[in-house]
Image (tube, rainbow, N blue to C red; front, top):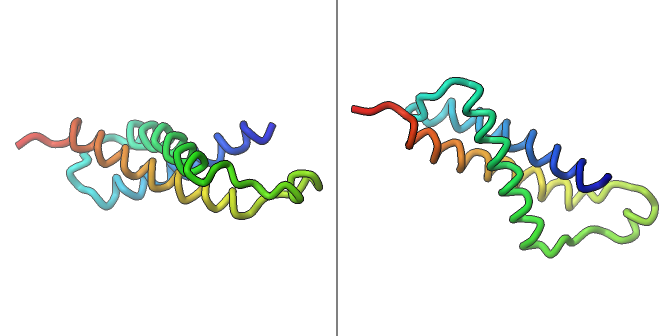
Length: 99
């Protein structure tokens, strides 16, 4: 079950990062749905990458007690937001306005 929660957190953070990037980068001339979809995909990829780089450093005591590992959650949020923003910027440049 923890894996599904991590994916949802990463996807939601990626959508937020993608939406923010779409507002900041004006050349990302896309509609809202492609921004959110690319943000979600990038969020899952970015969050998974951060998790792999950190070695899945979950707090065993928190997991054993059924609690929440705050460090892992913050890592997933940050990785998801950055990954979602990055992929949205790339997709925006590819699909964006042509001069």
